[in-house]
Image (tube, rainbow over all chains, first blue to last red):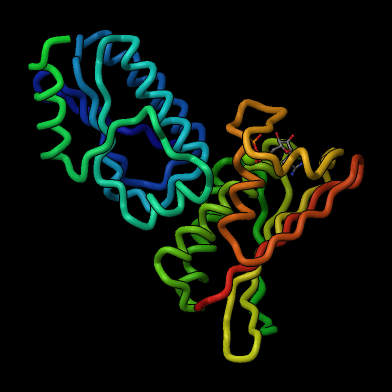
Length: 121
Length: 134
Ligand SMILES: Nc1ncnc2c1ncn2[C@@H]1O[C@H](COP(=O)(O)OP(=O)(O)O)[C@@H](O)[C@H]1O
Ligand SMILES: [Mg+2]
């Protein structure tokens, strides 16, 4: 089973998914990340899926679950780098990921989080 | 129909990953567009996972098919699990007996050109899908 590394940059956690993950690894990532949000006090989470070739309902649910869990732990999540073919497929699959914020790339994702945190809550 | 058949076991999460990889490789071979490759691999992932989760495993058969000048990919997911009592219900978006999102069957049907679901209680389940190159 692959373990996805979680990087910390200031108060942001960055996860870059580089391999085709087994379902077990996806579940492990959800748990690792929730632990890490709490242990680091991170205020933002970025999930970089630039290298991800497909998002099926299992990965889609992971993205939504991470966003919801992190929000409950006071961190905002942004998914960055979704490929156009993946976006088209996800919508047709029936998953619109309404509760998940997205940005086109890592830089824009960081800017979005900075903006969110400087705005009054 | 060419003799390009591949039979893959679905007995573990790693096998589901292997099915995705093999479907992708053959989707490229038959000349599916990037979007269509993505759609058919996503459908394969859903259907292979269903065989693993609901039937304890099964197998995937992947073949290249031809219809005049068009080529396509035909995938079958075959298991000898408990079967599905109500097919229409199982195809309904959001309906699940597990902990999924209930989008695997209905979503897969939308992602491919042809979709055929054969199942009955105690008789196992076979889902066959075809995606044609445009
Ligand atoms: N191969 C199968 N064998 C038995 N039941 C199945 C199989 N595939 C799907 N099902 C049933 O159909 C339901 C819907 O499947 P699906 O649309 O993939 O959504 P999910 O997997 O999220 O529940 C499942 O919850 C299960 O009850
Ligand atoms: Mg499913």
